[in-house]
Length: 246
Image 1 (cartoon, helix red, strand yellow):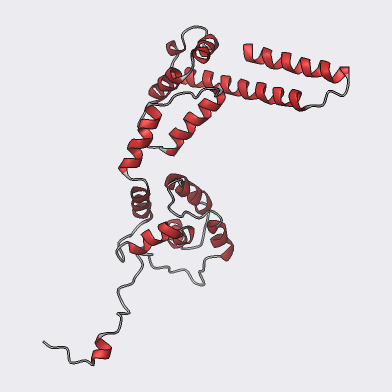
Image 2: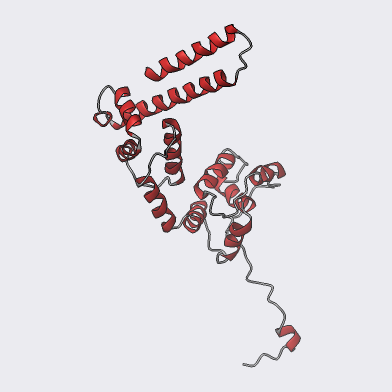
């Protein structure tokens, strides 16, 4: 059947079909509104969808803010659905705007679609390869290598590697000197320890190295105003060496 409306009317841009992708359940509470202070708190850490941004970290931070928000007769998940768009900008905001209208019904659904879009399988594969092929860099200290390795694990929380696999990979990535030092700290072969014991040994060794480096920086930067200060600096170095040996 022909449309007999005036052409000017037919050529007008549609005004419908632009509903949000997020479906917020009906709110029965009276006088409910989101506090501007809460919105500002969420907007203090915006996710823009850049390659260097971590969607898992964004979700963790967002939930740390919203998990404790309580409104009478309003579920916490509803608060999250209302607030989450305020935490996005740039590419991330465009992603949400392009999702089909009324296609996100729950908070779990929103998290799943967000993570899957900004953390595709290819990114998981790349990070898993980085973890598997991890190597200590020349001139990199033991504690620096350990922190860098843990950062890779944190970036890919679904890496799937057991604790045993993680420790074995890290141990074999170390220089011969650091491997020998780790074996000494373990009282023999490090790999003869259980994963839980091995993790504790590594953490303790990394803390000792950090303490030693801190003491060395203090003794190096302190101005030698007298023979007493020089003696104190020497004692600091001896203390640091004792800690390292222990």
